[in-house]
Image (tube, rainbow, N blue to C red):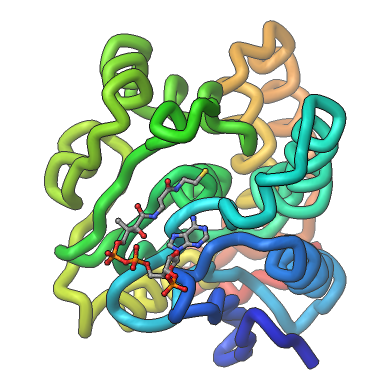
Length: 259
Ligand code: COA
């Protein structure tokens, strides 16, 4: 069905694997279209409870936007490329009502680092490397990198990483808060699935509220506190709240329905 990505669904976890290993899984137009379509599946298929985005092979997660597509572009084309990516993929991942986690399995550079940062959180293999090397090309990040990297690691470190184009390893990325966990490469997908299996036992509507509200906080949305109060109230009207509180009092595990 897809040419540049692989997808699989197992126990409610939908894995999207970017599959151009000979080009370091670089994001060309086709990859953007297909990841966008796969994210549409995540939104609309009720059998999908959560998603993983990863790269094919053990060398690269995604080594950036496909630089070969940049040569003929001028201002309008550059802006259009960035806007298309935001609409089709990056904002769609960030605003997804179901959890989306990046399993970073190697180079995560430029648009690759931005793709990982659009996910709700990131886990990495020990060989993962992160960076925003666009200044080497006379460019800046265009898929949300200046904003999301600042949110995740703070202004000073973000400035230095982007200005120097330096790459950092997985442990440094973890120390900075860019990734939550570092695993040996063979354990990366099993451990990511373990985390998502745990999340999938929790109340889905509450998880969606958390995604929306934490995204608002990250954008310093002044309505975040009021929206939390409103969403907290909404939870009280859900069947899952009735089930969750009853299960606690009856000393059993809850069976949430996302209603
Ligand atoms: N866009 C297009 N092609 C890319 C690419 C990208 N972002 N990153 C890697 N490739 C291609 C290379 O051109 C090469 O293709 P070829 O075999 O047809 O010549 C292939 O992937 C393998 O890459 P190579 O550079 O030979 O591997 P390496 O192990 O020596 O280096 C990297 C790996 C990731 C350090 C290096 O490829 C790199 O710096 N890539 C670009 C990173 C970047 O600037 N990203 C930001 C883009 S905005």
